[in-house]
Length: 448
Image (cartoon, rainbow, N blue to C red; front, top):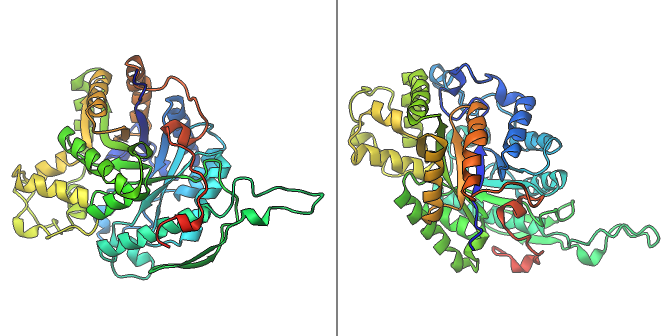
């Protein structure tokens, strides 16, 4: 009997993922900076037996086009993820705690130490989302006029991840012997200093905290470019997929898992969670009405800015009810490849107007508005169809969206025996069915 089950995560936006979510009367407008609101949401997700509570992030504030950005508080007045997740560790018991930290504007030692600390604090529930950053606002916060080229960012990211892995392997599991009689705090033979000199980093030392409950925190990625998929195939244990239909989801799943053998990895070592935008209703019409209400609240200037941000083009002067001209489309993406490609496809293949694209664009997710049964049907189709091991839920409103999923969708998945009815482990690796890695000597890790 196949006992494979769906894994569930969701992207935490306290006012909801929709650009107009903060305008809906059900949301707490200052929720993204209120730890009590995060705590309530994390407890709700744990009640729903979710694998992972995930916080996306960018180290940046939008400081131009303020008339538009003031209407769309994207990553504005939000808590820093590691600080927030550490605070949540004490008020949750089982759910995984994942957060984003960029490789472009950090140092490997700091990231290794922060996530190792979170894993210790939470008893083995930490996950690091590896990103290279995808906006020039972040670059300007760290002394650069713009992001480095895509290929350069990923070359740095690969070395960064490998160095973090080395740091997490500084100690054997039983290195700290705490022997008062022998006056020996740790066994020197079980500490393994790192001597690394690469194209981007030089480090001589080791991590000043012991090996973590999970062996090492879970590594998450979401790359859709060739460089991103190669990095994921080599190092990721969870990937957030961005396919917008089943066929694309199957192709992405097969492509990414098919690359893993090149790095000596089994496909079981990676879980692909497809992005899915969910709106639950007692009927399909009720769910559609909920979504239409949010779309009607979105300011037209926000719609243009949101598309322009991911197309990497200025659309502010274009008529709302005409197609986006071909000469406005850049030759290639330097930021979010999957988002860019989806907008270009809608322009070229579907011949949609700017307004139509703005209303339909889901930022790398497959949208479903309907009853719990309809949503579970879609999840089951993707899961059994070879397109996903689980789902990263994008919920247009919070906390209402998560409440609907926990109360209606989770029981439907459980009825189908597709989702757990209780936690059977205490660590995120146990929830995901990932093994605890054995400590490897630095010489056994890539990118020496």
